[in-house]
Amino acid sequence: MRLIGVNRPGTEWPCAHGWGLIAGPSDDAAVAAIAAWDVNAVRVPLNEHCWLGINGVPAQYGGPAYRQFIQEWVARINDAGMYAILDLHWSAPGSTLADGQDQMPNADHSVDFWRSVAQTFKDHDAVVFDLFNEAHDVSDACWRNGCMMPEGWEAVGMQDLVDTVRAAGATQPLIVNCNGWGNDCSGWLQYRPSDPLNSIIAGAHVYDYTSCNTQPCWQAELEPIAGTVPFVFGEFGNTDCGRDFSDLLMLWSDNRGISYLPWGWYPGGCGFPGLIADWGGTPTSQFGQAFHDHVAGL
Image (tube, rainbow, N blue to C red; front, side, top):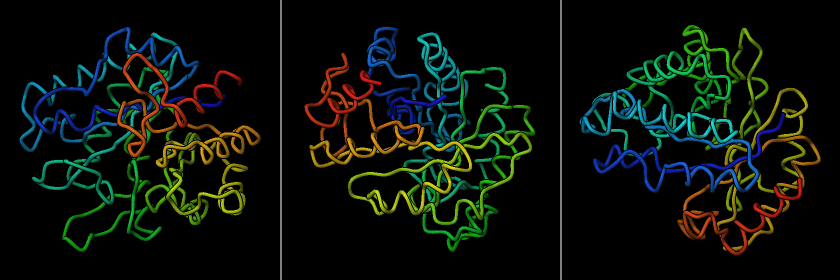
């Protein structure tokens, strides 16, 4: 089965900034607006520190309150007939608040985060775990096995996170995104983590401005992976107010049975890039309309 869905940003930053649990609406009507686009998955970006309730996250937006909200949000997504993809999006080591994307998962909190998330959702069949959003500026060996970072904190690798989720008793598929901001997949096959359940999905993030944003690169770098394991473009999009790049990626993926989820279901404008002009689900004129119409035709 292919995952054809959307990223729904907004669960990673309000909690850390102390003003909410999600940016934008999260009621049944909000979920129905997403489902009306005939998608079958919603990627949910999570904040490590909000989930764990640490490093100064206000109690009303972190710990039990955040975890309860995410569980209700996932249930609403599932009840609408869509998979929920839980993504470790914002993290940070030590006592530094997770206020953005980090280079790698950290030994201080990321293992605890995934142990808790996996235990919480291990009985939810319509959930997929996306282990880390976009590792970057590390070697492939570090990406897999972890390493000490120049700043003095310990990064844990993708293998550590796979092992943590499985040890918690969760059997759901695991998305393991490529190194290099999710865009350098050249070492993925060589360094991919092992999974006793053999249920790993390779993930890439590709935009019109990134490297490896052309068919020749996809054929050289991504096709060998997609021929070996399931593959998903966990993020993609046009940031130029156009649609040509996204049209090309979707057609290329359709011909190879590859899953994809554009970023993002948020009225953030072209540069965000936003699929929607409003929370009711009005597509933006180029990028949003391209995805909306393409999925309707599948």
